[in-house]
Length: 402
Image (tube, rainbow, N blue to C red):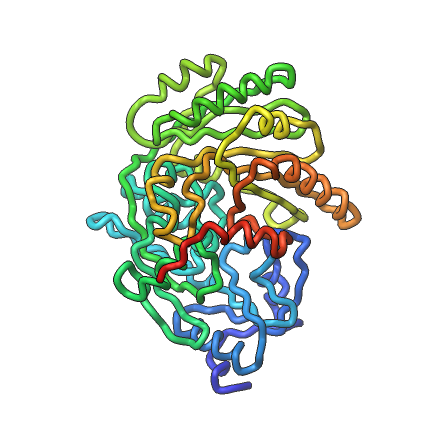
C-alpha cells in the first residue's frame, strides 16, 4: 500500500460492501473497479485523486449513481464514492445552503423546506446533487429561478493534480464558467454553495389524459400554453407509446393557476407538499432494473413533431417545458449553452431480463430518431452512447471564455 492510500477507506473485490458500492441505478452497468475509495472529506478526495495518478487508474466519481451510462464505475479503475459526504447546512438568514458532494437532492430539499426555502433540484429525490448540477440541472423551479447550476455561487473542487480550489464568479472564473453545465470532467466537487428561494411548502399538480383520437389536437393547445405560461408553471406531457397522452403542469409559488386551468377544463388538480412533489417520481424498485434512455433539446414543437411524439411504439416518452428564467441567462455566460430550448424530450425503457437488452434499446433509439429532425442538442446528463456526432452537437454552440 502506498503512503497516499494508508488512511483511506478502501474496498476491493471480495471485501464486504464492495458489490453494494459498485451497484448503481442502471442494472446494465456491472463493472468491477480495481479499487473503491469511500471518501469522508475533501482531503480523502485529494488522496484518492493522487492514488489514481500514481497507479494510472481511470477515475470515476459516484454520488447518486444515476447516470445511465455508468460513468461512476470505471472497469479496472478507481471508483471514488462520495456518498459518505452527504451533509447539507442551511443558513435561513442568508438563504444559502452548503451541500457536500455526495448529498442527494432529497437531503437538500428536506433541509431547505424546514425554512420554506428551496432551489432548483431535479424531479427525483434520490438523484445526486453533484451530477445533476454539474450538467445543468432541470427541476420544477427552473422556470422561476434558473437551472440548478445557475443557483450555485461557489464550488469547492479538487482538480486533476490534487489541488483544492474555490471557484466563484471572481475566483477562478473560467473554472466557475465550466462547472455551470459543462459536466463532471473539470475535477471532483466536494461542496456546492446554493442560493435558496422562498417558495413556501405547497405545490399544485394538474393533469389529464387524452385518448389517441384527440391527442394531437390537445397537445397543440398544450404546446401553445407552454409558450406563454407564468413562470410558476412548468408544463409537462408524457405518453406510454399507445397514442394517448397525459398532459398538465406543476405550479410552485405565489399566485393562482386559474387562467391555465380554464384552458384545461378536464384537468384534475391535486395539492401536495413540495417535498411530496419532489419524491412522487422516485423509483421504489431502486437499482433492480436495466435502463436505457435517449433525449433531445427542442427549440420548437411543430405539429409534425407532435405527430412523431405520439407515434405508437413500446418506449415511453415525455416532454418538459423550459423557458422563463432559464432563458434569461445569456448563452455565453455558462457552459450550459442551450438557453433557447423550449422543450426537453426524453424516451426510455426499463426491464429486468438481459436477453431483452437489444430490442429494448432499439425501441428507445427508434422513438428518439423520430424527433431527431427537430432537435437542437442534448442534455449533458442524458449522454450515453451517442459518440462524436452528438458531442459535436452538444458543444458547437458554446462560447468558451477567453
